[in-house]
Image (cartoon, rainbow, N blue to C red; front, side):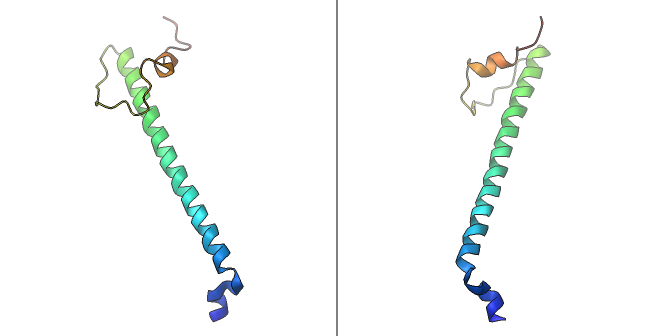
Length: 80
């Protein structure tokens, strides 16, 4: 039983491998959540502009794209 718990000398390697894997998975979850929120906000603002309503400002811009590329991307491919 002690041999199984000691993992035949590979304990350090396995702990590091599981730790790195856990950090990567958590990092991917955080990045996906941020991206989802960013896209959701931009789509909501685009829909509000198209419906003639002004977008509700929350006071923070999040990704800092004011008047830059983000504002122009919503009109790409749209014929007026």
